Length: 325
Image 1 (cartoon, rainbow, N blue to C red):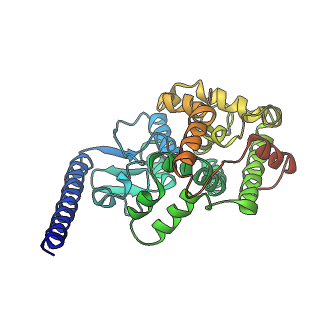
Image 2: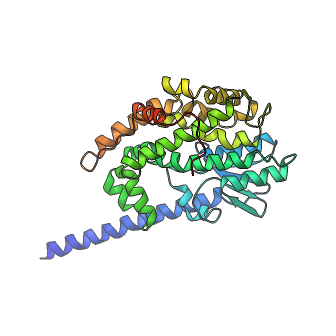
Image 3: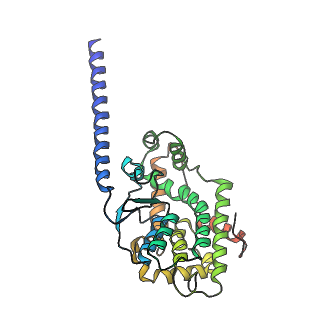
């Protein structure tokens, strides 16, 4: 009986020590993030260069020659959900902008602010193309959650450890579905593929008149609104197969023209990873998919849509279509 009591006491002591150590590590991490995210004079952009929304704001800043500080927010480590970052953006998303005492979040609002504050004049073309991009992003981001983000988290975590570390509430429910590969599947996934194809068809039609950029001969805020999302299309098998290179030839040529401009040198490494040669889509994600399925074989197996399935969705979509609602 004494041995049982001693073992129980030892187990309780170890549990206390382990939980205390975990809390202490969390406190140290929060303190480091508080220092990194503290207010600085001038204009500071908080974001992640792999995020299309962050890239859009970076392009606007570069377009107007604005001096700024950039603070990286590591999304894989969950820094966007830290208490330090919540003081900047309570929505726990990137990007966020701090300009002296003003804080803005949502890339559209930040872009409008930069244009009005530092740009020569308002650009009326930006609004419809920003609306186009936001509508595209709704479908595209769901596919990315299902076919890319799922494989990232599955390769890093076994399901029990991943689920137990999630905060309670809708966020946990969402990321559990992403981990299990049930976030966007079946008919819903097919509908999202067709919506993305419809948006690309609309853009292809707009560029068919031979214009160099969306506003004409010069790169503008309208292009900054559209381009970052297009750069990530190949990771979901869009704009990368022979069928789509023929179908969306104007878009591909347009992206290449944009990438040749000096204003696009912000995040050039990420461009190579996601656009051409598409290292992420062709090599990184398949490796993560294979390892994540091995690591979580006892719980679930998740596969991303094939290039053939994406081509089929493109083939079903009319070449020119009105903007989807």
